[in-house]
Image (cartoon, rainbow, N blue to C red; front, side):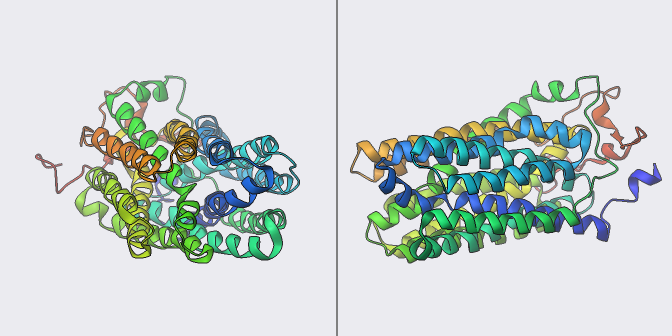
Length: 429
């Protein structure tokens, strides 16, 4: 049991969290640059927003949704082989996209290539971080997911700038080179956790999926992703349409990225005192407030900046807290597979959100229609999540969720230490 316990909260564990931040951060950041490309690609291929946004929706669906499969692979094989395979496919997808001659080819090379490539390693990497920490798990998740905020902060305006000078095709080639470099750095820092193990033959993951808690948070995750990816695809485009200069429009995504870093670090730092579940609920209910500022902005840049800052703060906190909530509810056994199934629901939301917003924008000249749809998706997700329990799932003393099984198959009672949210609960731990 000592072999399994000694790896928690160590300096080496923090190196793994930073490596995950680098690898996943560049993947998220590159995919979120799509809003900078949507106008150029649409003009070259003479397609409207709806069909063009399918490229982004498909890529994000596979990016999140393939976690239902790769999460199990991560439990079984560890994260490094998946980062090698997925990172290679991701970079090849970017390169291939730079040579497409029709929008449907973008569905294949960007949507499938980049989306599936990232989906192979994204969920397993986040799950790996969870298994390296106990006391500082929420904070470590905050560090791990900070990379996507940094990627958004720097890569979106960078992509917009190089599109203006190099064109969108060469820009994808440059992003492929940046991605490959970051994946190599991440690979050198990441390793498998001794606590990482498959869910076992007893069907723990299936039992998790039948619980009310899993159903509630999976639906909430899906609705949140519909709104979030629908907005990410068109923040820049809608701002430009309202008369905002392209460079200033791209900076809105940088504001999202910068504020998401604060959300990830601040909320995870206080999660141990206030409780991750309640903080997660608060973060999600605050997202419709952000979208309301977008709804009433009408081209006023100050209101757009407020919208971007609030969205980043709340979305960043939500993503960072999600891993700690999953571990609290369901334990560490098979956590890669459980996290992957939740990513699948986020993937479905990501698939339908951007096309819905795009097609609504195509058929209506009123901005309130597509943005109002985003607001409604987020509000419904917040309502659903507020019905979640604040108690861990009790699978019974004979179930593996009560034990932490290391790679060698040794079991410990460590997983029974799952924390209870503290401040908002009616009953003490």
